[in-house]
Image 1 (spheres, rainbow, N blue to C red):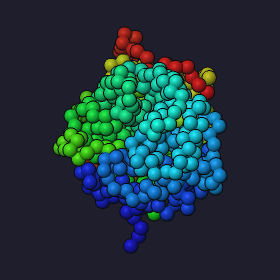
Image 2: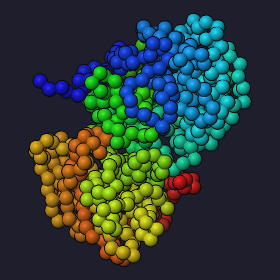
Image 3: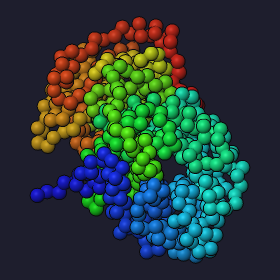
Image 4: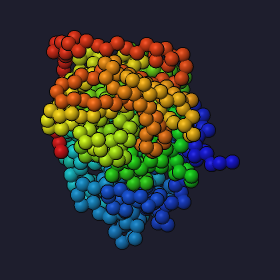
Length: 617
């Protein structure tokens, strides 16, 4: 018998249908961490991989992040047998004389992030983590938190971390400067765009940090803050609006849109549904909220997301450092435990008593102006056509934010060799090369607009090359139109969706003029040149580049682009195998009339919200 990596996933085999199942899932996720707690309880070190911050901060991350799940568990009456270990860790980690001291915060620091979970725990469970401490330990813990909160936090969702610390200090009777709390609450309101949407700071990105950070923390605040009814009501109203849109980032089987940074936090994406329940907001019928929540956990139970000992890995659908961020230490994935916030609710809460209901999705595209997306649902998948976002700061920022299409079922791929143009995956992207070795893809946009169910962007892969791109839904296909103006000849490669590749080349690959098709046991993916200018290639991409599966095939179109102006028209789709997929292959969409599309944008085009801040380099 060979080792099955899925068997190490602590959620695997759990039906995840009831509150008891969810509680067991949390306990099973925490249990593998116990051998890695330090003797003094303050540090959890899981492997040798590093993040950009120091090792003590990474060890604090490993200690603190499980509290996002353990604290709701205990608040809801659940049993957890290791609070003495956490009390010991809090006492030693904040004691400057102890060898496990976490180190002082002296500027913007990762420790600020992790202290938020401690503040949250102090607010909900003072009888477990504060009152039993000796007075010296209380003094050290209070002094540590008060010292950290005086420094400037990052200008984004981090501002909530001071606020959560303050909730804990207040609950435990510690005096602090409340003007700093109010200052950050006001600044966080400055990130609000309308219709329930925020941006995560003054940047061109609107990603999963909006549901699992901005709204998640805001809803915790709305439930736990005292004497701030007006702001609490605003947070609840915004979240209720947001739920009606963010549901379309999930598919009917529980998968969520693979898009943006920090995807190693995995089922933290369920945090928005749990936070709505925690704050008693029936933004959708309770059965639908519960359905989104439980299906998402079940989706993750079917992926090999843990190492052999059951510790969650850095990665997404499997262990994968290629897709990680510079701030991901081995403890980072445990932000996933934010999903367990509903365990703070009693068994008779309507979230738990409601019968799980399916999602209500149709074939109709759903435009979302603020993130610059058109959402398209098919069975077991949601696709986002996307324009208007960027990230210059993160590793693989162009792949995480600037592709034309993202998917819950097929994820996206990151490029691992910038000098191997011929081997690039380029799923959901158009790559251009002027030397056959290096390549450029869309990284940012000069213009990004939405009109009805269509998107437009103008971008420059080089200073002297301009590409105008229009994205159109054509269920189950989508269409991309590119008008490329270049003073010199280029070569282009454009990719469809990446699908799982079998061993021994057991899949069917079709390379033809104007189209490429890949057929596997699980999926069919196709890309078609509606203008008939390029050659098809079903490309076997480098391993471990896709976020969801380790080996993939990507249908591509490839061809020369002469100097001057060239228009390329592409259709792409992917579906599970069967009659629907075969019917789609036999009926690709027709090329649209570009003049009509341009006229529509001239009449109705409005700027995508994500782009409405200055570029940052």
